[in-house]
Image 1 (cartoon, rainbow over the protein chains, first blue to last red):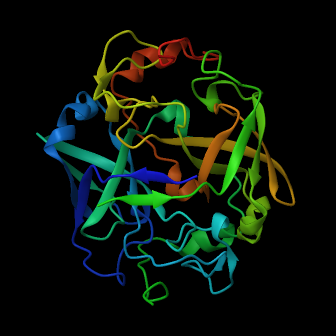
Image 2: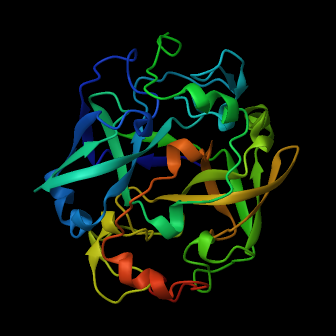
Length: 160
Length: 160
């Protein structure tokens, strides 16, 4: 079974290469960018302005191939690819929660951005407090690492 | 540009049809199911046990076509497809946060499930408090509707 998708837009940011990108937008709130939704899909943005945060699903277009065990940022030990958020996944789908600053027609201005410029956009969903904010969360291997993660940016580990 | 993915597993639940499924897992914590990850990807699950919650990305395999304006659950007014979480999307990718109860080899036992039995799984990511829990969230058109959403299940609006 093969599943085919088409980009619905492009994510733009100041990050033009794989090194120096915030590893997670929440760790670098000032990181800004914009989402261009192709005009044919613009009507799908109706009422999105009411949401403070949106979920972006995108294609990790620079990832080639996958590794079931891979080294995540913040750590030099390997973990299963489904226990980390890195790009070299069997299906290289990226997931980011960003802050929606403003909509102008088919363009969404966003902050808390951790996406490389030119990334193909697959979907946008509203981030909803009662659906997406969970309490009593256990963060697995990340628990200790998160204490020193603020402002952290990508190194070259996924550049080959 | 065409993007192709392959299922990495199957999501199983008690919900065999589109009507009567929890509209969001967080609204019905007792809803249970299991994720079968195909054996060839099992090594990618290493260390996932440490996480209390995981993100499932899946293919809305029963959705045919998309509507840029659609009626979500909890409301009879139409909103842009990117302002709602329904299945009839340009790229029908589903997103669920579920609670990870237990792992047995290539099977993840989960709760807070809102997915139809037999749904093709595309990716699993760890849900991480510092990345995914946002505060001061504005829920747009859902703000009022969420007050009466607990335990809500799907009706037949996406059955055609």
